[in-house]
Image (cartoon, rainbow, N blue to C red; front, side, top):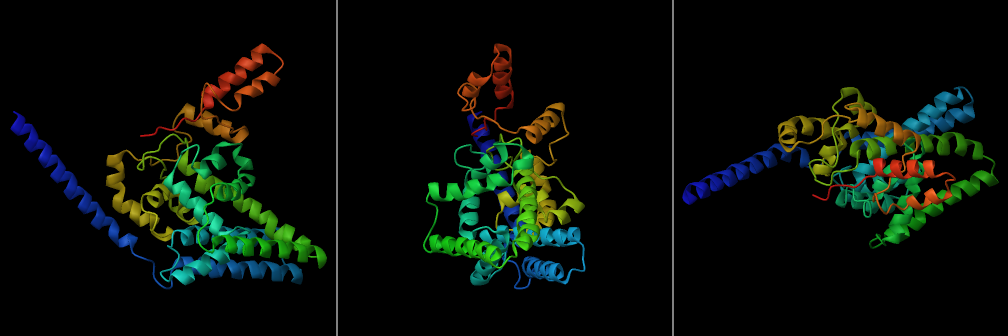
Length: 343
C-alpha cells in the first residue's frame, strides 16, 4: 500500500513538473523584450505631441477649453502607461532609451521616475501587505474620489524606507527642481493659467484614473496575498483600449516584464491555468450584495482599519457624544476591516 501511494505521489509530481514546463513555454513568447519600435514608444512620443498641440491651441485661441483639457488628459494618461512599463524595463529593449522614456513620462506627469520605480516595485513585492505595500494605503485610506492626493504618500514612503539606489537621489532632485522651476517661471512670466488648466487639472484627473484602474479595482477587496489571487482580471475589449490593458492586471503581477499591449493575448493563452488556480476574473463589484456595499462604502468613506480590536481609528469613538453612535462607529470599523490572508 505504501509503495502504491509513493508511486501515485511521484506521478503527481511528474505531472505537475510537465505542466509547469508547458506553461513556461506557453508564456515565454510574451516575456521577450518588445521591439525597437513598439506601441509604448508610440504612446511616449504621442503624449508629448498631444501636449504640444494643446498648448499651441491654447495660445492660438481657436479650440474651446474642454477640448484642450481633454487633450491634456489624454496626453498624461498615455504617459502613465509609459512610466509604468519603463519602471519594469518593458518600455524599450535598449536600457538607455527605456530610462529616457521613464524620466520623460515622469516629467510630463509631474512625477519622479526613481520614486515611482522603487515604490512600485515594493508594491509588487508586498501586494496587499498593510505595512509594506504603499499602494495598499493609497487604496484603503480614504474615499475613492480622493485617491489622487494619496499618491503623495509614495514620496514619503520612498524617503522613509530609503529606497534610492546609486544616482536616483540626484535624479529625484533634478526632476523636482525642474517641476519647481516651471511653476516659478509660470508665476514670474504670468502663464500659471496654462499650468492650472492644462497640467495640474488634467494631472488630478489622471491621478484619479490611475488610482482607480491601477490600484483600487485590480486589488479589491485587498484580502489576498497569494500571487494567483492578489490581483484580478476583468476581460473587456473596450476597457483594454481605454485603460491600456490594466483590466488584465493579474497577468502583469504574475509576469511583470510583459508589456501592456501583450496583457490580453497573454491572458487568453494562460486562461486555463488561471482557472485552475482560482484566480479572480471578474471586476468584483456587483457579484454579491457584500461586494456592492463595500464598493459604495469605498466611494463615500473608504477608510479601512487592519485590526478589528486595535484599530488606529478606534480612539475616534471617544469624540462621539452618544454611546449608541460610538457603538455604531466601532461596528463599522469591524465590518469594514481589511485583514489580508498571509497565505
